[in-house]
Length: 165
Image (cartoon, rainbow, N blue to C red):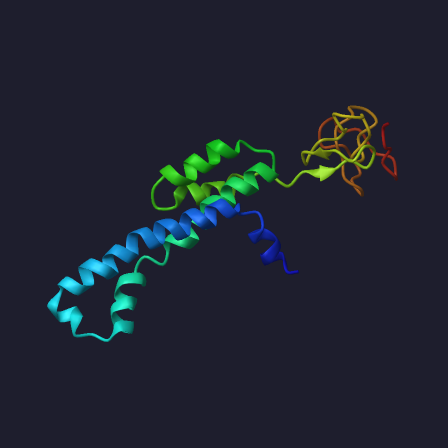
């Protein structure tokens, strides 16, 4: 399974259903009533009439799918998913959706000790206290492998950073 199909599974089914209902609810009356009242469009073949009625609003389904993705992804990342969904809906010109993609948190990772999901950047698991990444022996803040000094307190790091338990 590709990453794209995995990410599509984040979108709730109800978002696809709402998108299809809104699309069909907006375009079907247009096709049934507006197209047949225009004398010029009545002369067109049925396929051309359908394209005029159903084509221009085709963007509605992916747009609602994107809003559903914001909802599902923010929930998966343990962010304020209701707030981000409303921003994606209410901020015009898709700026709310773009802001979400710029400002979203990293995916939480499972703790090696207890398996609970923990937000990225935590040094210790809030559930079991297990060390999630190397930390400075002086100040206890996170350091990366290969750093010579702690960026927070300046303490020289041992050749192999210690894991605090």
